[in-house]
Image (cartoon, rainbow, N blue to C red):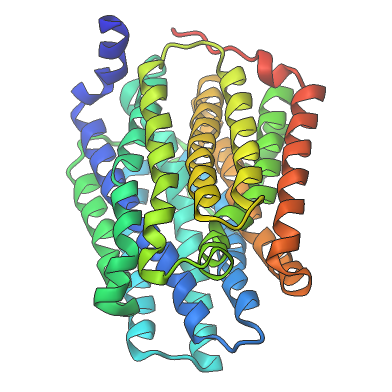
Length: 421
């Protein structure tokens, strides 16, 4: 037990990894504040007949931004200094966060105000879709392949450690500071992440690619190579398909429209919504700690499958009744299931894919979130027509059946192993 625990904590001996993980954790702590503040602000300021559509448009804006910049971001991560790329994205995210908070302070509820709001949300999502694969690709560079699973698990644990507290406090912060003040507070996460990344001594080794101009045609070529690589490796392809299906069907309801479900169907007051939502963070944190404890576990495919099933079953629990108990239990399982699936599938990909295409493959993998965000719009349109009470249970059953079908017909996912080097 001692040696396994020591191995799980071994990445913390690396100074650059400590800086990376601390910056990431603080940023993650304030992300729920951004997310929930945006949803409730639109919910409060949009016209009554289209408010659900506009709430969904937040996710759609994020999805389009991620699709527009995501694959290009992976290509950038494979060509340029990943540390500098993180500094650029985090600096620009500070600007977009301040801009949205200004709109909220001014309480701009006009057509022009909403256009600006969704445009900036689009840009912010694009920057985050560049940041995410770059941050994932840098971990093996710093730690080496053998410590990468432990590093990924620790990163997730650190990110989730503060999430329950952040979710708990979100409603209270919005109630105290208002929408603009709460959103402005979240910019501190990007600022602190910038400072920690700037202190890192890590530099990407210069390559022939990095010294040449990088035009649009070069980006398209790099992206095509990454897609071709994924398509020709069945394990990678079907892990991506599984996660895309799980997130595309489940995330729009449970995350993007989850606060709406909790406040309008379950009937929880805005200032108390964090009390219910925090159980997602608790489940995610406990799952991340467990993954850190068992970093040497070789059957990563089985863990990916277990996480996807847990997420799907918890989705059913979340929407099968309109009670706070169901929301709390469902949120707990959703957080744990999503963390187990995402961390384990990322580790699997990092261990299988060579460094020269790692950024592009991880950016393709990250598109699952873009697809999930885009799916929010059709789900909301159907919800406006059918009502959320009818649609959401149907979506939960479809998600569970789809996940079971993929795992049953593509057993290479469950059988996949990752051996320590």
